[in-house]
Length: 271
DNA sequence: CTCCAGGGTTTGC
DNA sequence: GCAAACCATGGA
Image (cartoon, rainbow, N blue to C red):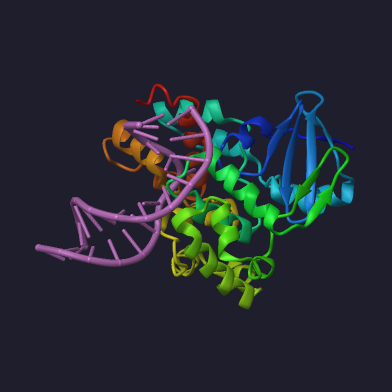
């Protein structure tokens, strides 16, 4: 099916923006996954994309996933960035804040601490295999990310073999909590930002940064700004310690993502 | 081999 | 309240 997208949309930049760890580039196609759904996207032109699903699935799953109900172009035009952010926004044009599955996002970012992005990808992929729930597509067979209930029956040894290291107790604790209360993460969607942040931080292994990642990349809380080592470096080196992101209000998280993508593309220069 | 990674918890003051 | 030590492992 061909879809026409006139707003910002660049699958390559989304894939390289560090939000999702199971998306892949396969030749000219980009693969994204959520729940039991997989999509392959190939650009036909600047605004036309060949997508591997039908209209119903596109509407129900992928428009929300890519946050296509929001107009990022108008957000870019509405803001008034300074020199550094202007450059970052320009470089990151096409990125979207994904609305990913909360459980997968939570576990992914608990694991992300003190790991490089390639290492995180390897871990999450190994973890997905533990669930043994395969999805057969036109191009390949992939594994759905296992639910908390499925992971509850997995042995410690298997978790360690995924390379989780000292994070195994964190993951096991989350598995125990959310396999017992299956609706909890869904219920938290009704909380305001402050309450959601404090609930997420009650989970062992979840601090300020990971909680903000879950809020931004799963709950669509675009005012939230995860401050990792790279964003912290920007605040120190480019802004003299004055965090510029809260100044962008409800769009602060989107600006953060442009900035994060920008430094990933310029890592060598950032000493 | 060495260094470091989208941090968080625990401990000591 | 704050700083420092400590945490397992893969990728470069």
